[in-house]
Image (cartoon, rainbow, N blue to C red; front, side, top):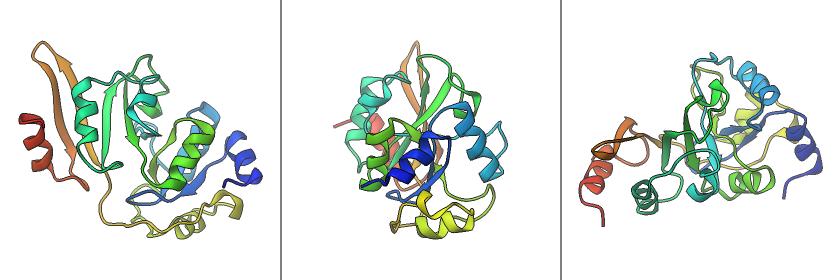
Length: 197
């Protein structure tokens, strides 16, 4: 599904535009050279971390600590609806959050194909910081000046992005705070968290 040119581009530190179940995303490897390219392309401040896309929270456990209740929450809603901010197993690049890393289980088959090929990839929106997102990965990639082989075609449903949840573990157990309401309404998260089924 992925071209040899695209695979070489990513392995060489390049950035790829791809469709997700919400808005177009930008993928690169979670390495310093790749993140350098991503942040330059997005004109994004280094103190604004980006999230990582994974196939599942099981895969994410190599990077972050995932409480069982968070796994149950993620499983109770449509895949791709949440981004979880979790404690890192070992601190990562500050542009990935350092000791607190955001992960999203990707749902779109094209996005999942990238992770199947490369492992965890960045899952930030495909636009310059402060600019509105495009409706398709092709339009997003073109607006950012990406080469043709670095753009994976695909429509995105659009609307809002994922719901971002900050997960903390303390003496009273695991708590979640809605940092940004997205495709999953805040009240649905709160209701489930109080009465998980």
